[in-house]
Length: 142
View 1 (tube, rainbow, N blue to C red):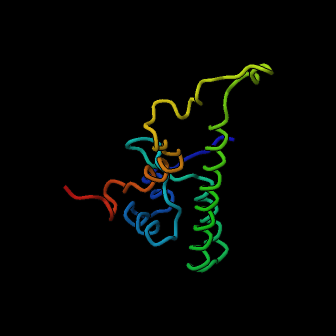
View 2: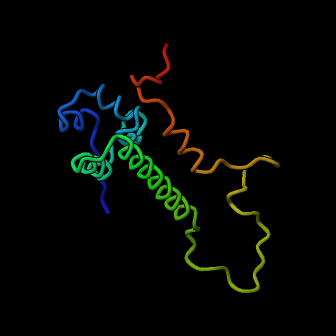
């Protein structure tokens, strides 16, 4: 399934709002948070935006829209967790033959200091998404 994304300026022009007003809607929970597609690229999933706009069109209150946005974010997290689980599955073509004992440690523990663990992709993803958007109200100042 292909997902289309809207950049902030595209979303603002579609809604007839300024980019800052879109940021205010995101900050107040009335619009879904954008996702980070790269180091300097963020975008809004078009499907999630259309769900929020449809809720607005049928006359839902701000409180109902905020609840919907929270549900969409929770659903996004579940989908990300499922994708992480699929990505963590081994890519071996076939199981090792019966009776062969492998004395090597699993590849995931190779290169780590004893007593440490590798950060999960969920932790790395949370750090990536939690970083403030340039120019947002939580952006660090120089």
